[in-house]
Image (cartoon, rainbow, N blue to C red; front, side, top):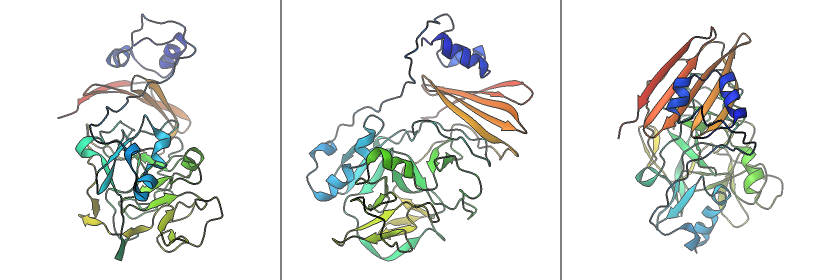
Length: 336
């Protein structure tokens, strides 16, 4: 990989050692000015099934809205029952910045593809006994954002409001124990990208989640306990809000729940042991450096430290630069 002198100087300033630069495929000898250099993204391979563009039913057309705004990062297709959504679960930067309660996990690209893709019901059905997230669904996702990032219960696995606990970044997300980035509140910022008439997300029961206005741009109508309501045509949808439950407050539609999570849904595959909270740490910067290389900056009492890491095939290389300037390299290989 050829990197610009500007980028190399920045890598050096971040403390990236030669071992990590080599592991990430960055050649120090190939330093040439390149002011137009942009981060690269891994594009998903096309799936050999009918594309969503062939959809003709109202439900299929509705589901194509929102996800279309992230073509290239999100791939969609469907059968008679589900809309399948493939992604790597990585939103565009910035992310992670502002987290005040950090468990030392970082965002890694995930493999939400093929048999491990997200499934959204094309024809959701209202449940006789809805499932409330206040006392259920503490495991796994309850919705999927239009950018392919999963959305978890607003309450963490301890039952605490993740936003109020300082666990989330400026956009309502963080990385879980599998280094899997996900939201815990509504990604309302996506409304500026998808437009007011498109959903910012879909609950896993199949009902759409809109932003702070109705799909026609009018003020939000009164919401029920699940953060949703029926429209004038008798169709149900949810809304994202700035107050609890922030996102869908439960499953108004029929879902299958096993071991306190909705099934089916994709599985994450941790590549390293999960870590413990780092007392006093505040994440102050996160950069995508290109070639699936990243740098996270955090501070404790005003002193900076870094986690620099990259993905090369099935190999994950981490460089930890602590507050005292000590450097540690760890390498992990993904199984399967």
